[in-house]
Image (cartoon, rainbow, N blue to C red):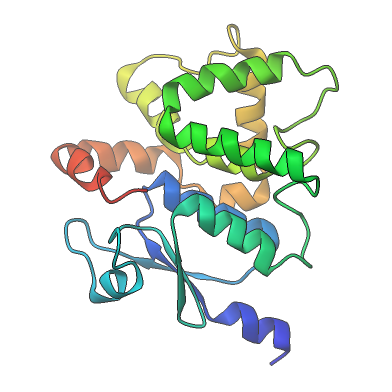
Length: 215
């Protein structure tokens, strides 16, 4: 086995498939071409491995590389970018100021999600360079942070019969969402909308309770 295969064979992600925070980690690993295993955590039953790996917050996701844990989804994505820096694409820009800006907006997504969508829509609308993604010509850190929620956004659209990303009202944001979800690394990590809808219908009471484990 080559050294690269040895490095990637021992990567595991502790999480649950419906979590957008787990999805963003899987997208980052997919973009970097890192072989990994998703170790599913049962709803309402935190495993001993999770508690030992993230004893402070006791939340998913946790990335384990050679048994060493990294927790908090945005930190994990940064770690993936740095740990596999030699593997394209780079998820964060090389310029320190641009990196800081990406980190700021990604954290803003987690802190103020509905507002963040409106603010970032303005960034797309004001883009004069015609970039395909927030990070430029390829999927980057901020795209992952926001785009990891698209499965649930589209499930909510279907369940509530509303259009949150109406192409007639927000054409650039809707086009970005379609482009993001069609990317091979994203398509491999993002479950189908039907699966989110089915999960929501079957676990309506459990979704809010389980959301406390998503960070």
